[in-house]
Image (cartoon, rainbow, N blue to C red; front, side, top):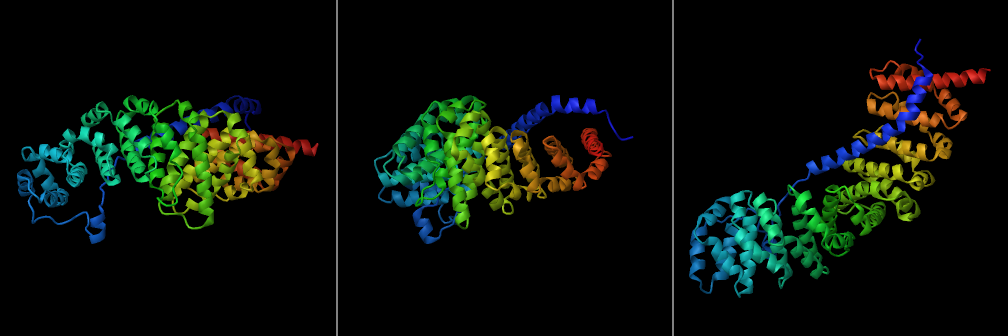
Length: 501
């Protein structure tokens, strides 16, 4: 009484199921890219200077004793204590009331720009510190008031000292997201070629490289970046340098690599055509870095901030994989190593950062969806059992694991018996009982492909008590799930009848 038309469901499954899976995967990946764009956050950064680190001065330095107006008047008069007054002004300008008082004072910005462009090197550094404090203000009118100084800040990116250049860069980075008008003016003043030139000239100075990365990431996250900025960046030397700085430096740390990785991520997810980035080696280099980082994870405690580098690298690889030729994936051993690395990250971040573990599983899904060799690697590297153990885990990780297993089953049918021996049928019997409808649907799809491979697999599933589970699923609220379960029951009954005969 519960049997459905076998021919109808068989035809539906064979003709439409693969196309449906591909369409669903494309839609989900598109949704993931959109969600990542929507969650991009533009943040400002405030530098702490050496003398403050030594004396323990905090970001909330009390400065009520010195009024901003009196300091401006003293600076206008000049004299030998300009440096003292400028240093005091830079600390006073951390207060929002002082910032507003500063921009309201007549010729205050003109005075600061004059000191910035003067001959006294120490006064130039202190003047750019004042601008940096103003650029950090959450008040857009304060940050916008700094615009007369931006042409000089861009010019000074080839400054004489690292600290001066860094401060100019972080000030520009803070100004980028203030408003569309500010961004348009910076673009017109040549901020993209200036950043490219700075990164090229300072490529041996990782502190400056990190600052360039921060400023560029602020631009790439701005509204309208796709139309106006991406093409300018791609036509410059910046992408090549971004790729080259993905390797962390043992002495400097992760900072420069993190900033460059996020910039590349924004470039990748803002464009449908990834051939230029593939040609510059972005996919291969990011994959290699993930393999190296996984080795560091297995050797001991994770370095602080490592997930800030792993995250953008994962996203770059996951988004570039669909644009890469399958033969390029299959012939390069780094992607086989990447399979193992991804499983390392899955285990490492499963408890501490489930969202990062989910992104890792998403990349592994994309990798196995496009590469037969990577599907084989999951089995040959003994990674099936650890993946099966993740099926009870939520946070969307189990759905990705089922997709990975589905990729292996569909691309390497000769491995299906081995998957069954590793406990996949038992695991599917458990996931078929879950309340999550997506999990049940995916489990049915994996089961369908498994049962097609050999009569031995069907017999094993019957021994596992799978038929009774499917009979219960036939009463599921979802019509599609009911139909698929009914079709599988029909196939199992047909097998039993053939054995009886």
